Image 1: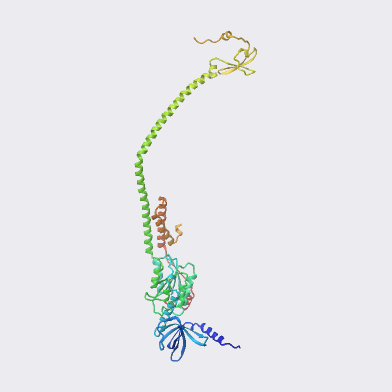
Image 2 (image 1 turned 30 degrees about the vertical axis):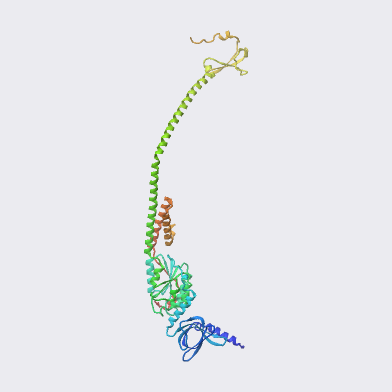
Length: 409
Length: 75
């Protein structure tokens, strides 16, 4: 046992109250009394009914949908805590509505205002859904007509996709938790491009799960963009406001999620036509260029003929020159041949003359004085040579002329 | 090459080819080769659409289990 201070006790009470799930978020109906306003602009009042009363405070800046006056029947939203300074229990009000509005409408308006203030509905937050999704997550009730419709529509429009069903109850106890769990499970999967959250039409009560804060927050924090298709086109849920794309019905959600096959086919067809037209254009442009070039060539052709003629002439002149040069050379060659023939010793030898060489010295003998009797000599005639020995030496012209073969005639 | 493209990639490539061809300035060989590639892509895209069958799989969720156990199926 120990003794507590007052502050410890009020602090403990406060923690206790503020940790209670019912007392932190509740609606209370009652009649307004003892209304006063502080200098700071906060409103203080008491909510009472036949049996009890509760101290209330509404801080300046909180939402007030009516003028508060004593005796007014209202429904207020807020949380209960302890005001430690006076040790009194207080209802901290954040929203006051007139009595007579259904609780679901009240809660809808309250949450809508809260999330809107947080910026969860802003257009800038909305993500584009991919034009060609590969995997679509579908959060709805298993085996329902809604699921059947979604499957049919997607199969007809864009069968290239894979549907990943995340079954969940969509109304009644646990529906909100189920929807949240399904969205989270899809987000844990790889490659989910878009999530459809859908439910068929129903009353506000039947659609209620889609107005719960946890569902709204699960949609807002989904990695993949979310398309909502809840109820009919006149039904708006909080889920619709938070979703990246709101479809008026589940079927419309399926249609918005995928491209239409016939649009794709006509898109492909128009690209094919454009291809043919573009290549046709290229080819006809080349054809035009070709005609152009041909015309230019034709225009230039006289010049070519002239050059060809000139070349012909030049060729003719050149060949004449070359031929005459060749003729001249040939004549020169013949006369040089003759000269060469005249100088050749073979020609001389063939006329009967012989060349005599001293065998020992190799000296050509042209005078008697170069030789002595008994010397060995080499004698060359036109077709060979023979050796001999000098037996007689005679000097002088008389000796030379004797027995010299005389010329014919 | 074109066989491995997704439908989206195929269609994007086809549209890019048309743009390139329409912009001109290509050699005739390049133009013809792009044309052939484009026609092939158009064919493949159409075949993909014709041959596709919707695939459906189902996640096992805690609530799914519960539903099966209870044997109820709310709309």
